Length: 415
Image (cartoon, rainbow, N blue to C red):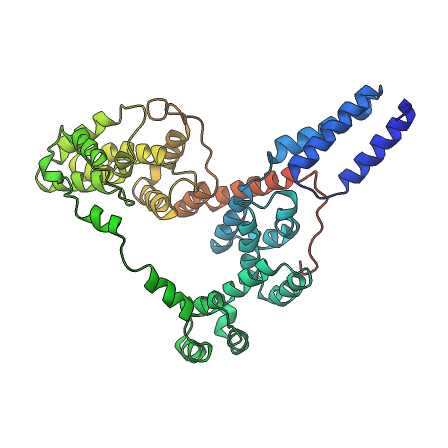
């Protein structure tokens, strides 16, 4: 560019086109940043400030290359629909552009499945949109999403109709057949449909192939496990150390739960809880200890009363990342939240406050304020605080919309 006027024209034109383009956020942030530098180099500070603001909006509004927050938005809306919120269902459709284009403004890693989940949610709550949605995806040759939606159909109310059964009778691929096998269809439709579609032979072969145990599995099964009865209260650390020495991996993390249950059954539940409490003073907790805290709360209720058990539930929710659905299972967290909603309803605000604040004595390296998203909404629904749940959902949706302000998203035709 030979002069400042030419530079201004170029930068303005480029920026105008970029504003009108849907692209990955990291790419837009970088490009706007470069345009800001170019504007400053050519004595156009106001133009540079505009470009810089857009760059910052992309960077701060949506992060670097992806954001699974969209999954929280979708889950929140589905929970509110199930809870009877009349505004949640229209909002689901209103966000069609955001979910339909999510693989364009992110790199698709860890967000492509959210797009599939959104189509499934629309199919469930707006069955009249299924045909035009499939038509749109087929014309765009988005085969992955076509297949995902086809596999979702057997679980929807549509499958219980004559028309739905006629559609499902055309299923021929192994994944499609598996979807039909797993569907909870009424017997009159399901039995006839499964006979027509036939068994999923490929799936059966895979199950048979992986059914035999490996030599390593056999070797592990022959290791003599340390028994809870050999480690009385005061020796919990020794039990965990011995399991570590033997390199015992237990995906259920049940060792401490079993140890607590054993000594409770033998009249030493209070002593076992006291030993476990000593272990809680450690900066980094062992996963087996974390997994035993809900059992400790149950025991504390029986031994010391509900007031004492409440602190164990708080501890369990903190160290098990109970508000964050990507860290622990929904089954575990939701069972705890239902318990609090049922037995400690007058203290529900205390529970939220106590489990959200920093807890330096529990997590030195992963410490910080935690704001619940979908699990907080679940908790509020369990409490019957539907207006608060609705307000929280609206705040999540508004945040999601604000994040996407730099993307000119068009709604798909079926929305």
